[in-house]
Every structure is written in C-alpha cells, then in structure tokens.
Length: 588
Image 1 (tube, one colour):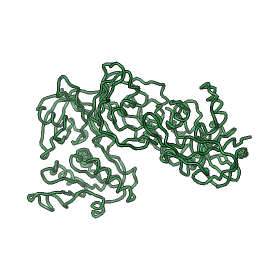
Image 2: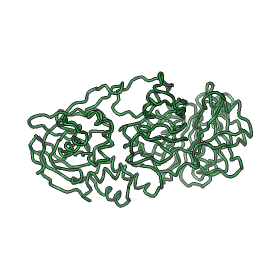
Image 3: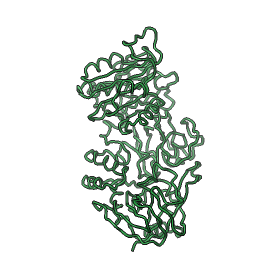
C-alpha cells in the first residue's frame, strides 16, 4: 500500500555557494499535522526559482523512500532526513518505473495528477553536498516527479495514497525522463509521449523539438538545447581563405570577399550564419579571433563578410588597415542558429547599423528563390553615409513579389532626401512597426546593437508576439543563465587575477568576449574558468545532463571529467564538465 510518509515545506532562503549567493527553496523540512495543498504549492512552502520550479504543473514534488535507501547505500551515508531531496511529499511506494504521466492519486482530501519528472538542477546537489547528483538522478533512473493539484484539500503524514486513474499511454516517469535526457529518442516513443495531454507544456515542447529533429544525424539534443538540429560545420577548425575583393559599403563598414585558395566553390552557408576569423596582429602575442556575419548570397562560391570599423576594435582595425587583396585569413566554417526559417507566414527583417549583415543574406536567399511570402525590410541608420547596402537591398526587394521597405534615419543630413533615401526620422521601434501595419504573425528577425534588440524583443513580446517567432543575433556575449544566483554587478570579461596551478601550454579563447586565456591545471572546468573571467555563461545542472551550458566548439578538442549521459555533437562542448585537450576556441 502506498502511503504519504512526510509532508515537507520550506520557504526560499539565500545560501552562500561558491563565493556567490543562491536563492533557493531546496531546504524542505517535515511538518506535523494536516497541511492544506493549494493549486500552486503546499501551505508554508515556496520555490526560489519559478522559471525552473513551481507553478501549477510543478506544484508538489514527490520522492520515494526506496530511492532514499538506494542513495544511502550508494553514497554510504546515513544522515538523510525527510525533505533531503527537496521534495514536498516523501512517499512509500510510487516508484519512478511504475508511476505513469497522467496517473491520478487521492491523498487525504486532495486529488493529484502526475505531470513530469523532476527538473535537473544543481540545487539538489547543493543540498546533498553531492555536486554530480543531478546527473546521477537521471543515470540511475530515480528522478522523482511532480504533481498537479486537481482538487485542493488537506493532507497529512500517514495518509493512504489511492490510485484513481492510469494515465493515457501508460508511460512511466522513468521512460519520459530517459526519453529526454538520454541519447535514444525513438520516433514512436516521442509520438506516444505527445499523446499524453497531462504532460506539462515544457516537456511537450521538448518532445516536439526532438520529434522534428528525429531524422537529423548528429544534430544534438534539441529537446534540451531548444535549438533545431543542424548538420556539422563544413570543415573542422580553421582553413586559409584568400581575400579576393575589398569594398567600402559606407563610411564605417567595409566588405571582404573570401575564396578557397584553389578557387573551388566554398560549402554553402545558411542565410544568417557567421564565420569566425583568426588574425595575428602581433606575431608575439595571442591571436585575435572575431566572428562576422555572412552578408552575401547563400550558396555563392565565395563568402562575403562585412565589418564595421570600430575605433578601438583590434579585429576590425587589423582587417581595415593591414589586410590587402590576395592575403589569406584563417576562417572557421559557417555556424549559427540565427537562420531563416522555412515557415508559411510573412518574413519581417529588422536591423540597425551593421546588424543589417545577416538579414541581408536572408534577403538574398528570399530574392534568389523568388519567395512568395510577404517580406518586410525595416532598417535604421544614422544617415546616408552610415547606410550600407542601400542599393543592393533595394534591388533585391524589387525582385520579390510581395516586398515592403522602410528606412529610418535618426539624424539625416541635408543631402538625404526624405522619401528617396529614407522614409522617416527616428529610430526603429515597436511604434514604428505598428504604424506600418507590420503583420503580427510570421517570423521576425532582429539584428543590431544589444540594447536595440533587447528593447524591441521585449516590446514585441509584451505586445503579444510569440517569443518562438522572434529571432535575434547578438554580436557580443549572449545573456547569462545562472538560475537562482542573486544578481550582482559584474565587470566586463577579463583575464583571471590569479591563475592556479602550472600552465599546460593550452589556450582558451572566448570569441564573443574577445578574450584568450592560458589554461592551467587548477582551473577545474571551462565553466569555472569562464566564471573566473566574468564571461557570461549559461548553466543549470553543472553535471553534464541538462545541456544548458552547451557551447559551439569552433576549434580544438576537449576532455570530459565525467561520463556523459548524452554527449553533445563533436562541434559542441558541455563546458560544465570539460577541460581543453588542445588550444580551443569557444563561441562564448
């Protein structure tokens, strides 16, 4: 007979951790007497990170005494107390390989439904002082699960747990957990999971992503990364390409056309992708590595990159002042997920400044394929001297059957002609898009300065545009994901102040942060090094299972510090549990 052994609650608290502070509700403790269970939680309970925990589909976390006994033996420990795994209900019975998603149970006066397995995050390892615990829960098939509250009511330790319904498809918690986190994603099982209406929306999205990529070889785990699977880069590391043309596009933007040394066609890139360029301005110093969007026609025999000359830009200055025709540059293969999607609705291309480059490649593709979709081209510049590709874009728009164009200058010159050079004075904003009756359906692609992209994305989302249909491309570091960490002011990326341990001779380059660091034996993992350098990073489990930290590996090789449950593609790396095996370049 299944029984409720303990009811555990705890409010979020700030806990010191690795030199920082994390806000977490992982510390749950048993209570005596009846407790009311509401739609969002048990009375007296709370969650510190509502992005990953809590809400109606994750109202009550359940863990089993059998798993307690298993981990006590595994770790040779006898100090566990109820609530040790952050669960609200400690139960006898209800094993993960028996309970199914959609099962319903009556406990006391309340009615519950199983919605999903536990979300893997670092905090269960923090509570247990076992950092690898998130991965171990998956690897050993003992994650625990969440209840949705169908009928509120009081519950109490000792209550019998009565099963009142078996979920449709009868897929167990363990099956669903392994389907997402492990390497095998059989189509039939994914389709089966998507037929379970009570599976929480987030897990449904993950299963849907995996199903869409089921035929993509080596495409990675899109259910965890949220990124569609892609073919591997056309070549590993860097290869020399020659400079065949140099063209001034505006007062501050110039283009370089790159070709293979034997003049053979270069592998085609997807519209919107970028290449990474390695330069050596100082023969005795570290290389300068920068990424530049491809601005030419996808599928052409050559690549065109367009670069803005920044006053203090080491990469742009070197390319502008020292690179000449027929010179060679070390170039990595095209990468990136900011690419034009093959969808049915309108296409809205929005850019500011040199952010025009990747969306121009998209416009090239649309024109080359005579795409019938309505296309909106909206660009913001300071004035006509800072408006690259003006004529090129207009020629491409003329080839499309349903194209709309609007150019906004923030400070036009007297020689800029309203209605000819530009259409309005000001900056590109949501109000401008509304005034133009830009359609709300379809996909919107935004590129430009970070503040511009962030502000426009937030405004579009607040106005009801679905986030999944808003795509952005950042030139610099991507936004950090550090769940539960109390925010503090952080400096710009910098070398570590006190490198521990002897050097290995390897270097680690963070391309988006413009930083190259010698690797030493005391750094731990690539994630640890990035945090020492204040490089913005994304992570959740810190044990190689959630893939939040998965980062594109531009060149080099890595060694993993533990056995991975689902290894990423060879072109990516889980930085939370990896160390360099050679000089490496990360898209970070």
